[in-house]
Length: 430
Figure 1 (cartoon, one colour):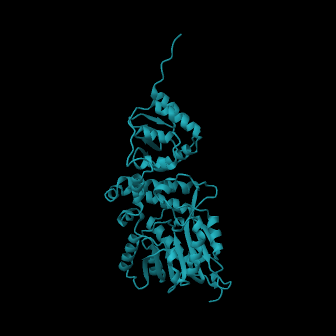
Figure 2 (cartoon, rainbow, N blue to C red; figure 1 turned 120 degrees about the vertical axis):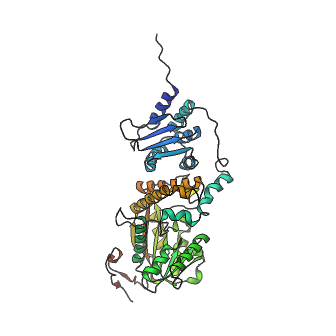
Figure 3 (cartoon, rainbow, N blue to C red; figure 1 turned 30 degrees about the vertical axis):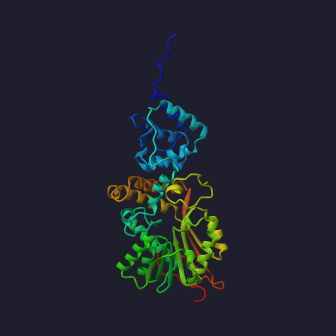
């Protein structure tokens, strides 16, 4: 009897990868190991990205059912890398995360038995050690504005832009977003305006400079407070615009002082249990007949929060997304009337793609300001978020809320002035 030739370990490795990705229908990709060996998901399609596996540990994480945060760690420490279209890698990762755990573990064992033996090692200590967590999380609060400016653009707006055309530049789209917020609020000359969580002051500058409001911003970042006030001084708007370091919960002496209030990309940090307090506090700050625009991200009702999310661990460790239903329920419970809800999901995907382009375009300059791990955290966060908005796991909503004055909302019957044209006449007492 003639014996069959033994199948090489690399042939078996290819077979196991084919088994692991059985049923995958996304963009064609390839896998390349640390020794140069490669495997393609489809022989007759153009490869859009390559997963570069630099250590056996990364191979284990990729195949064994490691969670999103663990795979993110492999990327930020370059044990796992992506060449080609970074966005094309996310359908691959999503497919792996949704595979049955039993299959993934069986394939992982077979993959490792085929792999070249290389000593396993960890960077910055063991996963979840204080040293490692602190090194990974500190980036978000310790970065200078010079890191953000190259990819956020001149507006320094760190939130969803508003695209009238997909060809709009980032600066143009961000300016359009600032103006849309002011139009929805129907901000007028001399009105008192508050921006809760004002960042580097983009919206207060626009409200004061373009709509002639008396604009006040609050932030919990000393760096943002300093930068915002420098920008205000440079614009010559000190007389009607300022930013201070203050928690929104510490605004009791400002009761019913503001005609209009906005909060952009801040309530995500509040948490479900604190939403009633958040909306109740804002309700007490706006005058009767005033309005509040809350602009923020919410998760889809059908999207189950991941137990170990990369973003939760490395980007917003205390931020928990709620659904738009939960947000509206809390707002109404605080006494607000819901006047309008607009979903800008596609706009945020476009914004994030612009940020990714900016991060890549300015990589060399940014690496002179921050460690490579920090840069890769931001790159993965922005690209992964764009993928999440594209899938519909999350969306961003502008919710316009009114505090009626004895039944009068003082808002127009039409919304035509939001998107162009003149201001509509208000319905209600003057």
